[in-house]
Picture 1: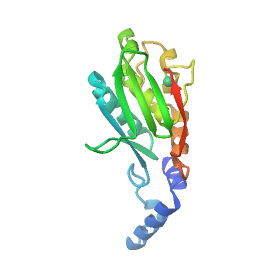
Picture 2: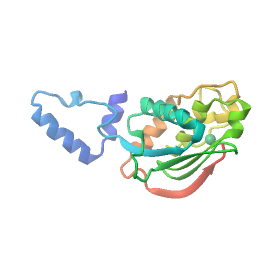
Picture 3: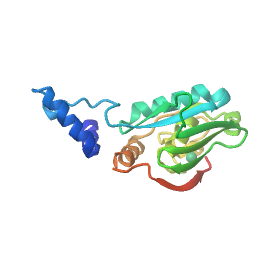
Picture 4: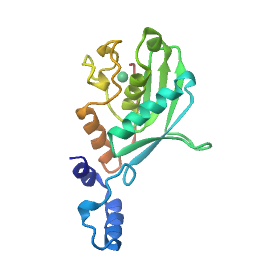
Length: 187
Ligand SMILES: [Zn+2]
């Protein structure tokens, strides 16, 4: 399933490169092309330098997504590089200002953390908004985008199958990432 979705989503240019590679490998059939996380994934860079005590939760949330999808990967921006996403700790409620698919600002609000909400779930939820997912509230703990409506006891940081598929589809489209009107998600 995963590899067929991956291949279908490959941009033409990448497919051409893979075809060349397969030619050089002589016997390698197309289906043996490495379906790893790197080949065609769009990279979205993030800057957690303003995330204060939540830097570790940001890294864990990014890792959750990197293990969940193949068409996009989240990586820390290198020094001097302009990041696609900034994460800023503040005293409000967690929220994300999306400025397009794969870009925006996450406010890692301490208000929810102080109430006991799980920091890695907050991180992966807000990153889900960056990756184009809306809130899906109210919802169960099995849904990442149900956010705070799943209750303070919910510690699940993983997107469900539908949430993963939506992100894969969004980033599998040619031209994904075109700027869109800014949108604020308050949760
Ligand atoms: Zn939300």
